[in-house]
Length: 256
Ligand code: PGA
Image (tube, rainbow, N blue to C red; front, side):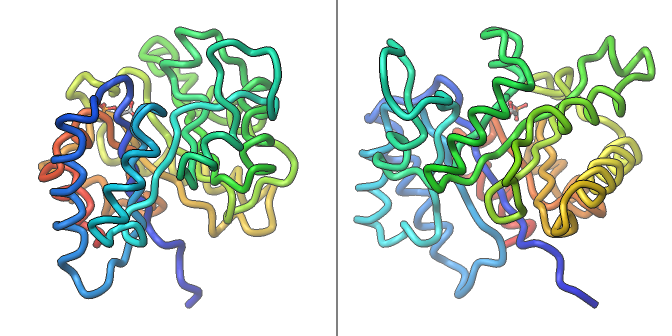
């Protein structure tokens, strides 16, 4: 039997974290992640961009930079230029990131990001040799209208640029109504959606079977075992619980 993809547990710190406090938390996480002889999953922490460089230093000092990778939370589609307030994929790379979250529902909702905009950002991420973690997911209204799968299918079709492959692209399925709410879909609904996403990826990409499909939305140490054992759930994108090292590790250790 062919081996499936290596699980990925990613932490999305969102707009949280100052140097003080963040250093202690990342050092704690480093200690926990260094305990096992070998990690059977990949760990990525995506702090605010202002912390990337410092975090790279802390992880190196703790000798944990091979165990914990870093990611940004967004990038611009252009490599440089007159884009006040934006950050390019190359800049994230330069600050120590290997990954970048793109098309998170908070960016789609609060910044009007379309599928086409997300695809352009993902192409920029690929060009900068960053792994794009592309987020998709339906709203509560869309789920209640029975549109969840159609919405996610459309988002995947529109948000993944040519040149996407399992090695440079990760899908994060995050139902919008499950983010930060403490609510999660029933395991059977997670299973159905992840199977559908796998089928979509396999239809379009030769290596569709190897893409990581993460679940995100109120993942906690308590529900992680149930969520992470579902077929085609290849890891998690964790928001709130990623801010506390013990909680993030409590999730990661399920697959570590
Ligand atoms: P949450 O956030 O774990 O706090 O629900 C997940 C996310 O937004 O990526």
